[in-house]
Picture 1 (cartoon, rainbow, N blue to C red):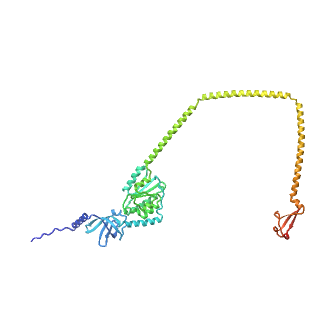
Picture 2 (spheres, rainbow, N blue to C red):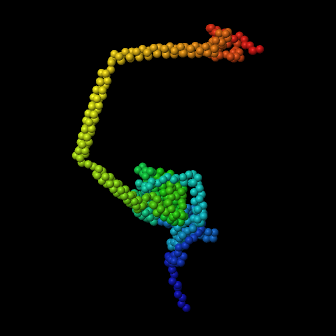
Picture 3 (cartoon, one colour):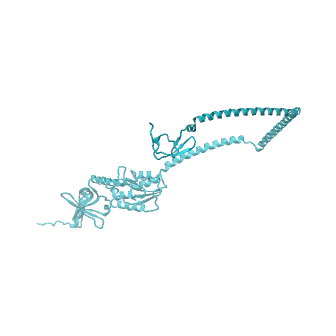
Length: 448
């Protein structure tokens, strides 16, 4: 009885077949579990174990993919992992090659987001609201050099405002390196003295993605760097529904990268239409002005006369005035001569001696009448003065004093009307009918 020996596989062949079977039949999967034994050697790769309460699997996250992971990876963290099931042939280790890692459950990320948002808001990090220059003299864009966001922004800028001076500062916008890179870029730009906060602006932008993809823009230090930026900052991260801490810390937020470009620069087509409209208005106004001036010129031309003709008219008018003046002077001279002749005749017919005697008699009569009137007036005034003197003497205090009364005055000249107004020892002056006395009060008496 013969027996055949089965053909044996080498260990390498066996591991190779097992690897091919695993990669073909299982392929890429999402796995949720707890991180354990997280190791980060100098190579930049991340090695760890993913486990639950009944099993575990060794995992590797290579450097090329690790740089895009923003979720913190610490022992005990609950994560979701997307990767390919494979086998490490040299050791025969069954493992999972990770492609993406995110915190398990968006609720935890959102809770962390809300906590940090409340903290920064309480510290005033979200208080910036400076106006951005429109359009900016120089626009500095922090974004990925190969992303769709920068292409959209540049396309809108080129369409709306080709004069825009744009400088792209390429930075990673996803992963652990993104926030530090953007913070360093902001610090560098704010140290450049040639940049003017009144004329230059910074745009931080990237396209849409999951909460994990945008997590770098929820970095506390990035939000503080935006708040402290000397240059005004606009944030346009993700789609309209995506809100990050960078949006709150910036001076202005745009819902999308394209919307940011639209807000930063004017639309050349709109301006051109406005210019065309103003040009048409100006042309119509100029045409109307030219027509009015042309009509006025025609009117003035019709009124304009040749200088010779004007001189002729002035000469004729001057001649007529000269003739009128000559006639008037001749007429006046004739009238004056006639009046002088008439006065001469009247003067010759008068007897001057008789006239002189008559005037002397008239002057004598007037002098006698004036003397009588003056005497009569003096007598009337004298009688009125005598009557007024009698009336004045009747009410004069001197007349009262003449009957034995006196007027008492204190040292200030005030009249004393009552004994109560004096004090013993007080000096008084008495005005008598004739002369004055200086007295001293010895005692006061009341009327009995």
